[in-house]
Length: 75
Image: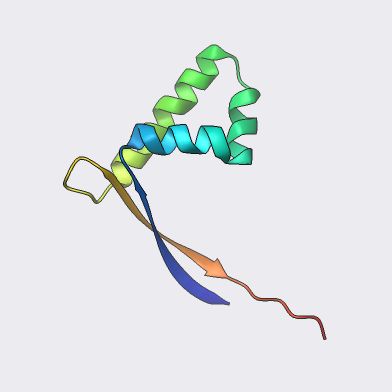
């Protein structure tokens, strides 16, 4: 296992949400399972979260993150 870093970069928090709502399967399914009020609430929460983690100072979205890379091999 190796800890790695990745920086999410989008034009804005809304752009981040739009991309994930369109292309990221678990996010697509989450929104599909909600009524309109639930979709609005989830969208607002996700934009707020992205904004709270934003380290950009130029109006864009920059969210540093870490993940663990695991490489499995068959023996």
